[in-house]
Amino acid sequence: MTPPTDYDVVGVGFGPSNLSLACAIQEWNENADSPRRLRALFLESGSRFGWYPDLLLPAAKCQVVYAKDLATTRDPRSRFSFLNHLHLRGRLHEFFDVGDPVPTRQEFHSYFEWAAAEVAPMVSYGSRALAVTPVRDAGTGRADALTVRVADGSGERTVSTRTVVAAIGGSPVLPPSVTARPGGRVFHAGEFLSAFRRHCPDPGGAYTVAVVGSGQSAADIVLYLLSEYPGVRVEWLTRSYALRAVDANPFVNAFFRPGTIDVFHALPEDARTRLNNEFYSTGYGIVDPGTLQELHRFTYQEGLHGRSRLAQRPLTEVTSAAEEGGSVRLGLRDEDGTESLACDVAVMATGYVRTTSGELFAPLADLVKRDDRGELRLRRDYSVDGLDDAAQVYLQGFAARSHGIGDEALSNVATRAGEILRALVAGAPGG
Ligand SMILES: Cc1cc2nc3c(=O)[nH]c(=O)nc-3n(C[C@H](O)[C@H](O)[C@H](O)COP(=O)(O)OP(=O)(O)OC[C@H]3O[C@@H](n4cnc5c(N)ncnc54)[C@H](O)[C@@H]3O)c2cc1C
Image 1 (tube, rainbow, N blue to C red):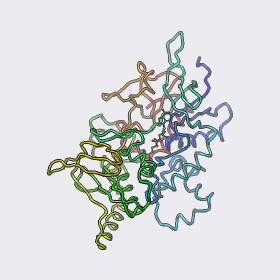
Image 2 (cartoon, rainbow, N blue to C red):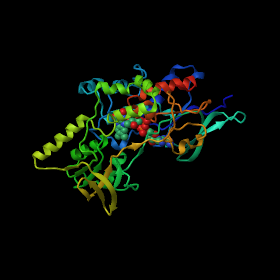
Image 3 (tube, helix red, strand yellow):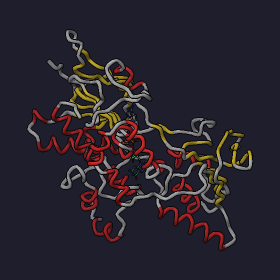
Image 4 (cartoon, protein in one colour):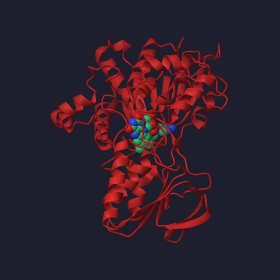
């Protein structure tokens, strides 16, 4: 018999993926008889909800249309839709009049915050999950439940649950030869606003800022610096020759539809890899065409007045970064050889890596199946392969290899939350 547990589901991480699941659970619980309601707890290490808060730049836009929100593709009648959020704030008509289906990141963030407040009783902020451990039946050895060890402001505690849904996002990646000390002048884009304001506090200051990377975050940061800081000079270092625009034509977008996931999941490994490689450039290392136009217009206008605050250095690799007193010296390599560049701060907009090989899942080692890179294998319903007993772990955002690279984006968050909810309610993994 399954042992009693504190919860039916414990979510680890409370970004958009598990927020979307919390909304789905909330709606399920509002409509279900009490024995069928899910007892849910979501653990978030941050002290409040935040969707990359240090990159909430005024002009930065989402890379999805508003309907790819927390709920609409799961249930277009859901009260957790972006449109309902606008309606409640009396902004529906104003939004439509903008004539752009892609909201700013700031507006989507305030929508996420509203939804997070609606489900707040399920969430424990300032709580980091340290390890997920199976609870085995003494007789059969079956894993009938799980415990999650949690660290919070007052120490450590353990909660028990039937299932865990982990949506822990990625960890910042720096160029191989670069290290960043906490609070230092070399920092990842994910810390941008706090770190930049700390080291460059004068809004009119004549700072030199190096920005490394050629994706959306790099472009948003460069545009922000040029627009908001009249004295700043930007050195933009990219390994590629030219910045590239997102390809969001409807035939490309079809790859990210939920129905495609079924097809993708059933393909052999090498075909999946080929497809992911083909579509990689639709989501990574690319920039929204509007942002590119805006950047180009900005620098063109400056040139008209004999100014040039943006220096682009294409085909350039950062080989070292050293802090020297109040500045940074970067080692660079390009087609012509090596050189060094002095700047006040260096922003590494060099992406994130997602891995399931950390301590969190280590206690499950002898139960779960891993792929050739050591990552957890997932079934079609996002449950971890190998856990065949009552205890289950589901992952959100870690299925790029098995379900397609869209798994790391927002576009399928609501549909996936609906699928996981169905599996939680049915109590049986599969697919
Ligand atoms: C700046 C930026 C903008 C983006 N914009 C878009 C976009 O417009 N459209 C799109 O499709 N994709 C976008 N993406 C991709 C991004 O992956 C998704 O937007 C989204 O953040 C994925 O949500 P998530 O909840 O899976 O992960 P995350 O948003 O990364 O959230 C993970 C959460 O888990 C918490 N956490 C981690 N480990 C633990 C632990 N052990 N215990 C407790 N809590 C933990 C973290 O603190 C974090 O809050 C963007 C990415 C970035 C960096």
